[in-house]
Length: 305
Image (cartoon, rainbow, N blue to C red; front, side):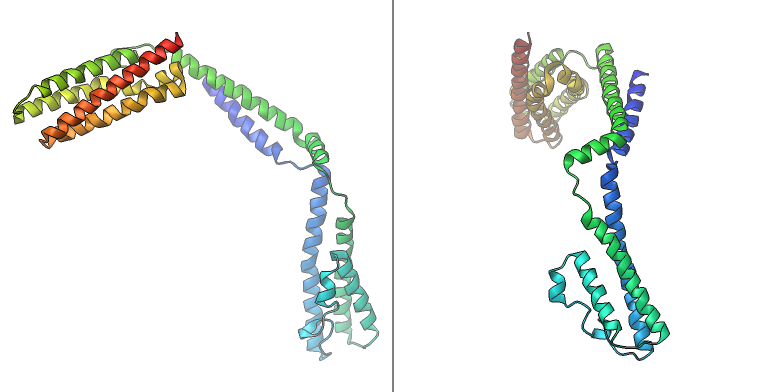
């Protein structure tokens, strides 16, 4: 039950911290909105310009003001030196000066007016953007705290409390585990049992002068019994060993133990293949690794006492 409550708190905490953490300070959010509107106004300017050029072409008014490959209102070299506001102001000034040079049909004149109005609207927005002051990290943080800091704090609190509850529940479960005939028992007892069984197997195999097929089958059966019982339970004790000796202690034990398990598997395969020399080499190596694991266990127990 406690673990379920902890998981619920962690889930709620993650949602709150993610949601409120994505908040922006009001001033910064307002500045971003203004900049976004100014950027989008460029699309309206482009659409009005295309409509103006299309009207000139339709009424055979000639190519001017950047239409149909004619020189633009502001040449590219000058445009590169201007800010966004300066460029739009220069375009408006050039457009106003050229309006006196020609007489247009009504629809073309109205299209040019629409183009000029789009430029003016864009100019106002970019003036707001360039006039806005840069907001520093401290101001952004204080603004965010005012808008989303409380919700983020509650979410962080739920995360910490939920994690603590889950950790306590896991520790309680580990402490309540009791050894049984079918479950993991003391690591040292199991390791000693496996080492003695493998040592006996090595001694019997080493005494063989001319092993028969029946003898190889018998050794294989004995090895299988150790692998399926004590060795399997020994490997299952990993989490308990980690809780008792820590991650580094578990690694020092399971490094030689894993090597021993691999060599026992290789011994089994060699016995199946009737490869006696490889069987002897592998089972002897497994015994050596098991003895190394026992040595590591003694050192860990001495340091923990």
